[in-house]
Image (cartoon, rainbow, N blue to C red; front, side):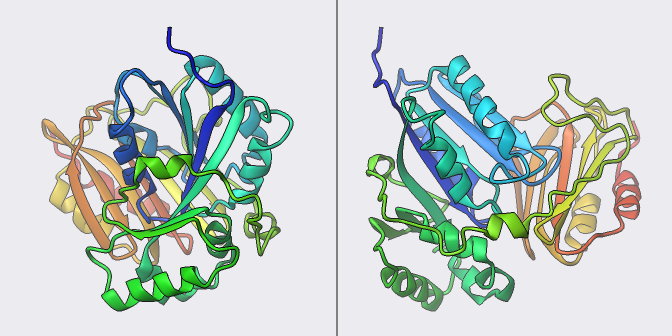
Length: 343
């Protein structure tokens, strides 16, 4: 039987909304050594949860999702029991935690290094992904959580270098190079690729938050729900009826979210639905897994950029919108329902 160290190597993968964290983790999972068991805890700000279903279904991989708030504050009380249950179930050789893009890492770090896990987890490098194009966005560069995601990172990967302007990449490199304490590793990357060896860098205990209270005043922790909503983390999945999706809404950190779960048999005219989703304004992020005929696609929009690709997911269609203002969710729902194909 394989023996593993008493303390489980643990990494936090951070980065602002839409920077490519899930893509990055999927690439790391593809390099998982054969015979090892890995556990991944995914935290989503949105209500319905999509990221877990975008991760591979493979032997030796255990994925747990906490949707509907940030584990740094709104769902902070859930972090310890959820982690303990995941560790007990998976007995992992490595644990990876992906906080929501507007989550402050400090509270998570404190929990992982606190008395509940001091003998169980070995917190190693915290990795932050940075989209250099965000340096042009006032709403990002003025966000204290964005700065502390970088402040608390041992490794910073400048992502999306295939589509970012060289000047912005160089600006990101020079800014990161001037940080103190210095980062252990700064590198350019595309599609979120991280050298797995970087995960085992020893965490720099000198790193500290510049804005330690950011996660306290940024989140108002209010979440409202409608339709046939179920409580967070219930063991029974929400079930929608054909043509009558479940809708869940929430807000916090000056952002608003709305997610829909559609019945598995609901089938969309993708091009009509794409036009609806791309026509929405004041969008921070839209993610969706959508049935179109016999195929299913993953739709991904970050601000005004979007792409889509086929996925193996088949359980139900899900769409999650995060916006900088509250939108007319009822009208958006009706517009999406108008895109359903009749059988």
